[in-house]
Image (tube, rainbow, N blue to C red; front, side):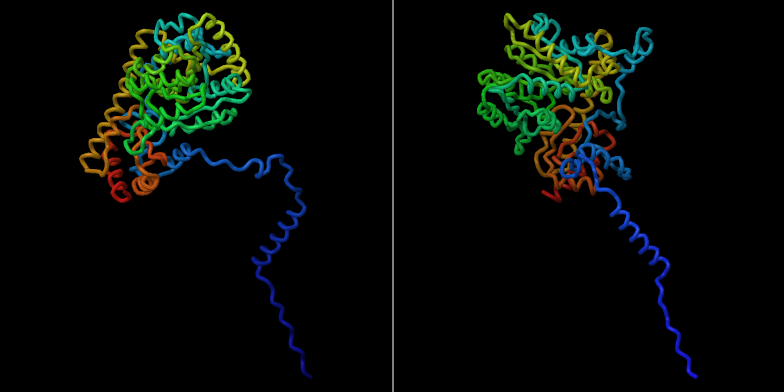
Length: 450
């Protein structure tokens, strides 16, 4: 009797079976899950790109190379590539900590009066007629960024033509955040030529032509000194021409000053453009930062100033403007922060500490000037193709090297040197230990990608 062969059953492996089961369960779960109920889908709120500068900083920190050099972030470093707490700031901090009257109460809406009054003097000069005639309204702000923002809010609310916001003209290039601050409040933006790529200096004729062609009463944002990002400033004679042109066109000056005393080491020299415009009778506003010149980067100490032109009703105009600035400030931050303001105030109101601060400023500006000279000298010693006099012709924290975006990418990938893609470098990132390395790296990428 023959027997029937048993049938063979091929079973899935345990892992395949488990994977299939999980996949089916996930499919079922997806069908059972409710649809997204957010009011902010990706079509309405797309993922924003990372801020390029802070992305650069993150990439630098993640780089494990012992040769890496940070020439990106605009903060002062000493010759050991370390943050430098100004000696005068340490003394002011000690005074503050030992003050039995110090507390953490709210400041007034307009801020610490002992700071704002001295901040105005710092810009306009002790005994300035505008101050004596009560033509200046000053408000403490969240550093220079907050001052620019408060000014933008004020102009968006009160400086209009036929009900529409007037156009703001920014230098090309300018600090990247300028664009976003003014766009966020609805002020339309145009650009005026500023940097000449051929000479790596000021495109003065292009700038004048643009300001001449701008509609009358346009807002013109001007960097008072140490232009960011180029390091290129007009000469005193060029500033006088700019003022004459702007007066003829009835343009409204908006000065942004973040480097007074830090640029040249001379507080008065670095305020020269602002003082000249005020002397010429302009009505204007000023955004002032104490981040760089006091090293108070994270304390966010700054001021915003309105200056009325000389006229019988100037004091009354200033009072009205101050009242509206207070309303805007109240709805934005209520009260400005106190610590950095107190530190700056202590220094500005003590003649001995003020003198020491001036010496600290000369230390910082002097080291940066020395690094400019060293970098240029080493590039010229190497015979690096091109002209490099612009390195020393420019002033302040930054230099526009003239490197292309491709060269910037190569110097980062091959030499671990970090700078913004437009070739801007922070001179404070250079020191006696790395300047030769940076010069040789620049020489190599210029030769390879010229």
